[in-house]
Length: 465
Image (cartoon, rainbow, N blue to C red; front, top):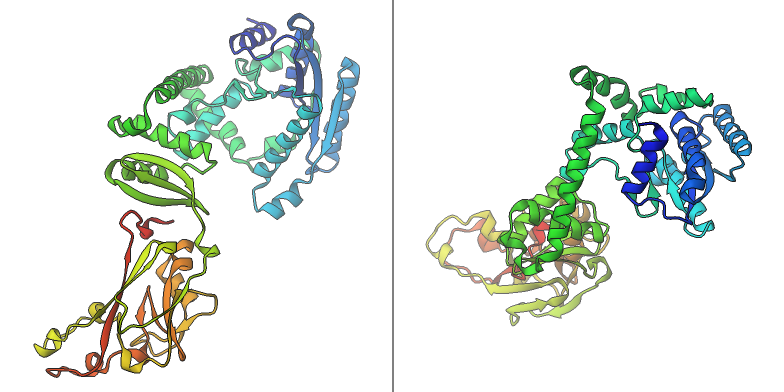
């Protein structure tokens, strides 16, 4: 089967180009994209669509980039195909966004494609991905450790993007261009191993082809099989009530979770899938921070993605009386502060008092003035018991590796002398009970209180990443 026949079959199989469509060929000037343009040009009358082209000058290779652009201009002029050229600043974009050159170029390139598509009233965007590209993508996904979804490789059709050459090999592309006597340009960066895809193309694929001479075709069949499996699971998920997902095996549950994350535009990793799946199965009520204000909320085996208020936007402050308050509920942070008079039985028995038991004890006799309970603020400091130095809470929280949410909701108590207690750390040296610090006597006369924090049952803050 020739290239044109293969493309015709691919277009028909996936219903890529309805009659009357406008199609933009993404033209770099390389062999693959030139082949795409020529094949679409030969099929446009028969299949009934209008053909356009777009070239993106990434401005990364100086004169060579301009050479590619001029080649595309002359090619489209000779074929009477309208061409739009976009210049993008890849280096500037990558410096601003902190991304790799390869990723930055891809983002800007597809941005230009989308812009041109909108100008043409929602035209289809045809890229020149072929069987070889698909094999490289599958290998790359294997190296990243993706699941069956990654084995699907490059989808033939996604939204307005179509890949008519996906059933064609590179050898077939080169043969067609030779038959047509059609020139093309070569991007010098494709010959280097600066990018991961080039390493796969130059090193990995040849080794695998040495094992199986029909490797590219074998990967193509694997991709089709994986796509069929994924399509089945996607349809299955649509039939399962949310409250019954937990009754299905991990392969179904994790696809359900992945679908929710995708819809919320949240990154989905193997580790995150495993954590969320475990919570959905084992915890009746829990929350897990995904990013920013976005949380996975679990209720009776059902997972939902919800937007919850960020604690950095909440300020809590309340004057309290340690002698008369016992429980202070703080719904803003799903916490309750518990204040209990410390029992002297341990001292009376002459036993050793463990530090874990005492680091949240304060002597009310040492507190100066009004006591305020509030959440942490920038610049807060405290000199913890047995530390000998005043420490910024920010530095202390960094050492504890607290999440941003934990930091912003961390509670402190202060009097006229400053902060004397912190939720994540305990009491300051100046309010620590002398009876505990220096005495093993049989009794003490200090008003000693233990301060603790109880988190709401359905909210485990240590889960926040």
